[in-house]
Image: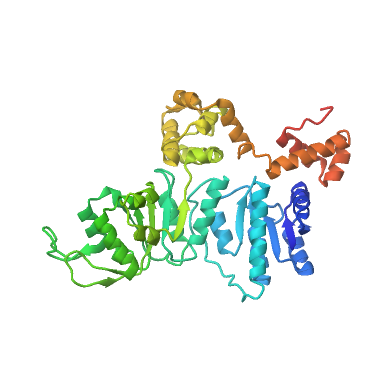
Length: 459
């Protein structure tokens, strides 16, 4: 299978070429969009693996151009700057998949093989529709760790259908943000997004809120009232904490999902509704089904598409970026000139377990900004600082922060570092010769040596 790799970093290109050729791919290389388009046209390449951010061009523009010319082309995008809107735009513009750097090379190979299978299966398929839905959502989730990028990708694919979605995650992870992203990037975006916390209302109150009621249905019902299903007609209804719904109400909700009709409390007639359901819960619904506390048929109805949002402690590499975003937000909001967080404080933030997840982190940053009189946040500005020091090993927390994905020896960056070091040793650290062999200039060699902690001799 022919594959084109597009990246403006020559060392990355050569590493991927070596890796893929060892697995029987015919690999072509390009350093910008023009070269890429030329290579695809000349060699009739069906599969492209491209970086998103390049100095002379960007992968999303290349994706649009290649899809315009060759609607069946399959393209995987790589990025070191993962984001919700980036994943949504990539998927909606026709990308086959999206992977964040640094990545496990075996995972990349699995993704490439999946793309090959897809290409072979669509040999006789009709031309694909390359039209995209315009991206209008703000940046709702932040981070580029592999786990959060998986959330971005599944969310992006969920925008392309009207199937029900179940979002799982602990409190404070951003379940409503994901539900809003799905709505705002779907064909229903011009209709209403209506949210209700099912765990905050009694059974009778939730029933009247969801389905509405007619005048005289109960004491105090002095006029007809539309339910949330009617309010959200044509749009999206977000049922937060669906695991808290009583079994009696589960039956009624299932009927609505099956028949597309609601009956207001006290009424004998049905009302047709067209509503997409996005549900969320922090509970273990699988266990609740086994215990008979949640209906199995309803469970399968609401989890056609499932999105699992990881807790913050499982994506610690995203904490520095999140902290800086919240620092900028609250410094501006509170009129403070606070420009950074000290190294010691950031290490505390990274190794703290964050039981309240992103919501707790935001609260901590807001509190620290409000109370400090300094221009840099220090460890003492956070009220968990001393507790945090007891909960984790300082060294391991720092290592997670620096490596981004722990100590996986198969990452592309590890492989690149080993390759540069090998070339330097082979030429006895002759920097000009090493630069020539690597295909990079001396400035880039110095930058990469500094990045990977490689000591250049005589310096």
